[in-house]
Image (cartoon, rainbow, N blue to C red; front, side, top):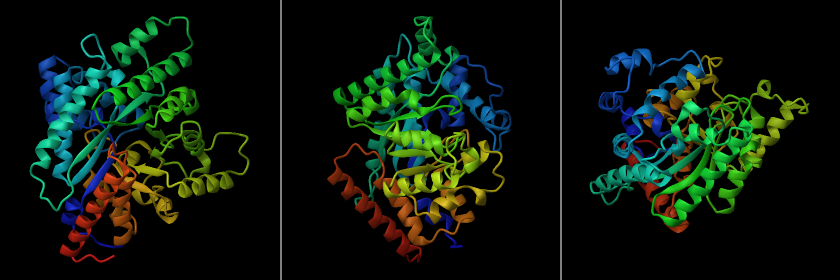
Length: 403
């Protein structure tokens, strides 16, 4: 396998196209705001929280998700959303990330004091302030730092998720749960399109997240049809816990331009539809379709290893087959706090366990920028990508790495 200098991996221009705001707080900030807002934590030290909540290893996905119940409690004020977004941008730039797409579910943070626009405005303000400060220091021959915001609709929710969901359920007491979920997604889609058209907030895409089990993507078709008809990009969490059918639904029913995780893409054992008789043929056709359409998969190695307990070694991750099939992929963190990782660590993990040549690595890094949902016009985006590649190749020369 090719050996890479850790400093090279840290310094190359990178993207993080799949990072959750509520899973990526600085642990010190979580503690400070919790004290200020009288939020109960199992510990008020970073070491204590790492031991009890934000671990390196988790029993299962349910344990992995417990930390979000704490982080969302400290993200209910505009000033805190602003601070957390600002710090996330700064932390990313410190490790070489030049383009960041932050995703979160605004309906988890809405209240009488914070409507949809106020929530998005607070996050955008923090990211924008960080970008302006960062770019004032970036040399002219290096790519600037930039960002986009991805709005998440939830596959399912319960009243205790947030005040918004509690009130939504209260005024639809005679509606089936599936109908309320669809209504929440469609309302969010309409609000997102309106905000994108009427403000300078850098919303670049729409997403669907939450448990795949029992909550199929097709239940959210109306919302995704709406954003699709208004030229908004789409990414969908799929193939993380469920298999290839979930990915197929994301692409065909929800018009997904990118797939979040895609871990189970090559797993015939995770195909549940009894009408799919030839599972291997189904997977082959799906993989070919994804490859031909350059549908990018947002790969989150550490997160997957923490939640998919049946995968014992990183080398057994489906990334290997993605590379074999020359799929368009991008390395992402998912959750910097919950998974205790960074983009630099994700790339280091990949090159340590898979035979990724210098040319492949450069192409993967470039895919992140090329397949980003940048708000910039296509011509401007192409110039930016060219600048990224030029800078990357300059660093290759500095470290003596040839394609």
